[in-house]
Picture 1 (cartoon, helix red, strand yellow):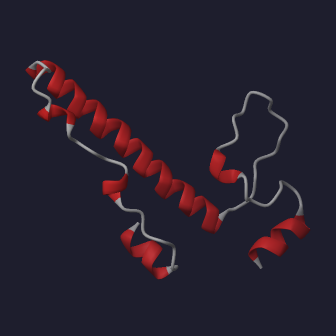
Picture 2 (cartoon, helix red, strand yellow):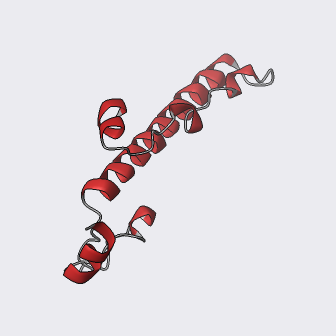
Picture 3 (cartoon, one colour):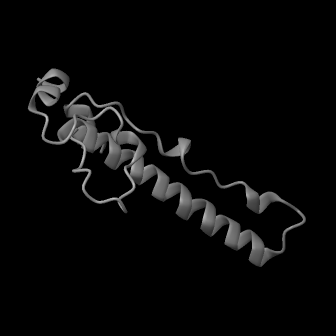
Length: 96
């Protein structure tokens, strides 16, 4: 995202805001627990980081909500400012 975000003037997303590895320093954890905490901290942080990159990309290139016909679909929180599905006027007002 370093190149594309820079080229399109999309704010850069900093990895350090999403991944933090510090629980391995806790003296009361056993070495396997420290390993597990490092694994989970990195894994969950990386997923959050990638999600933010994908959300920023989607907002810039395709800021249109999904069709609301599937009640089981959980709308992502970053979609709240997107143009409404099948609403051309809303899309043009927000993106053109």
